[in-house]
Image (cartoon, rainbow, N blue to C red; front, side):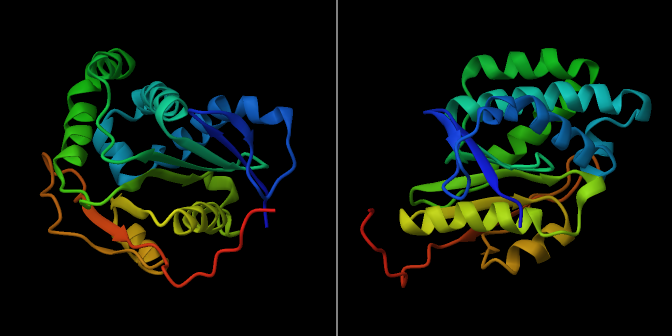
Length: 218
């Protein structure tokens, strides 16, 4: 099982399962590479950037912007080997007004689709209670099949359970729905209709495990 590091808007440091490391400061740049590689061959990636020749560079700019925002307002978890990344934001994750202009600058002539995607995410009804939203969870394509995504998700869900917080996610593929369901996520309202033949967005929630016995910190 891979160990993890965490970067948040409040501090940088190692996750509880890993010893402190100066490597944590490099999480954003390496995380952007993981997000880019993971989305490059997905249906969502192809819809966001139909031009295969422009896809990688455009996704790189978008990923860097997403991670910069998460490092300010949320949390970025990464396995110690940097091959898997999870991005969380406190919900509802409405970005600052200036962020939309930054998104347009980062994604160039494909900005209309990126903006449509993000606004569609915001249009879905999140759970009314305080929650954290899983924005992205990605494993580099060369390193899949070893439980890295499960490790990252389990780490953060245990922390949310401890804080009695709901987890919220929007699945962009049937495979992701199936995977999240295995981790106690349930459908939350109707899915969003495709945008210009884009992927269907399926909101899901996971209530905290309220039967855990919490021990005082030592």
